[in-house]
Length: 475
Ligand SMILES: NC(=O)c1ccc[n+]([C@@H]2O[C@H](COP(=O)([O-])OP(=O)(O)OC[C@H]3O[C@@H](n4cnc5c(N)ncnc54)[C@H](O)[C@@H]3O)[C@@H](O)[C@H]2O)c1
Image (cartoon, rainbow, N blue to C red; front, side):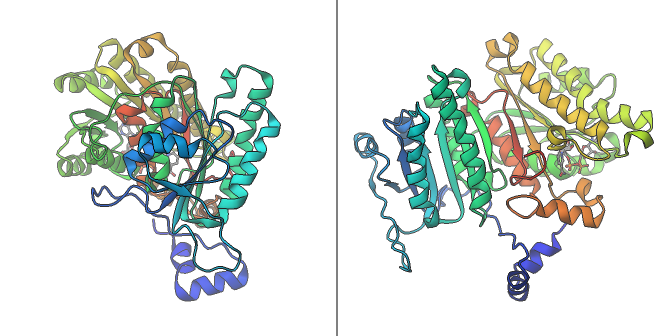
């Protein structure tokens, strides 16, 4: 599961050779470490806004919380007042002089632009000025975030047009600024301003290393978090497919964030499952999610803990064949494991009231479910079905009344035993076909799930977030 090309391209000789031959040089991505001594952001944030910037006050609160130094760009007229009022130290961004080696502002790790007040397309020029001036100063593995209003809720067609236009810009930024930098668009509904903290913390930090060019919608306020290093303290999570790969990393991240984890996997994987659960001080439950009694057994396991706060449907399989060569058993099994079992388990847990108030249902889809893939009619169908399930269930009154959210991650190429089985040439091409020029790590999917699971992510519901390094597939 090691990317030999990445190792070579980052070696002294390999880097020179790759440069000479014009080959991609995958950057080494910074990843998160839970360390109270380490700042979430290892440098300054440059802030800009158009017009009044309706989200600036909410942004100030987050930046105070993460103690990040902030520099205001000229396109942020209201910022200094808002920051001073909130007691946040701030300065002015000084554009670097061409040829000058030492940057005037020190290390810049994030560019954040509040576009929420934009109502007409001609006002979008503020984004040009902001990113034109600042983008060269962004450090490696830097973050670019544009905040806007959901076009579907805009009062006029002109406002909706301008807000929708932002997506083209952030997606292009992600492709232009390589060096492990990411670009995201966050639409914040009116009234949900106070719900942005968990999302900004996730997107600004190395937790989102392999998430880029995503459009995230925040539609609600958030519950408070007492300790951002252990936001899931006192909670219980149930995760399927935990004995290895992405599932083991999910269980690990949720336990690190404070949750007790019920770890589920097939009886054949019981030894590895028990080992994962033991390391995390969790509970091992050897169970095939497709078994007739699986929903009942999961309800019992959840109730034995007084209910669960989080369920992550991660167990998944592939049985790749072109449709003409595929046996019906291969079709049936993939849909059973990847989709139908999840539906039955959700129904049973909800009917029994085993998911607590403000609970989280998190599903694992795939970019195959968005773009389709050769030899994966069964798999892509199951993963597209997961997206349909997330969208339809997110509007259910039953979930809304209990404050339960449902979201999905859609991983791209992640380094696991599943992708290790892909033929070498296809595997190497798949690794390179994204803005990061490399495959993701299992922890990248796990961190995204931990963000969905956070109590402060109440406003994130019905979102599908790709963890794919801005893969060209299905882009
Ligand atoms: N690896 C990738 O690049 C990638 C990309 C997109 C989506 N995904 C999805 O991520 C999830 C995890 O993938 P992975 O790469 O870690 O795969 P993996 O094969 O390494 O792990 C899957 C786990 O699920 C378990 N499992 C399978 N069937 C089960 C069943 N019936 N009941 C209980 N457990 C069962 C397996 O025993 C295994 O531990 C899957 O849903 C997969 O479709 C992976």
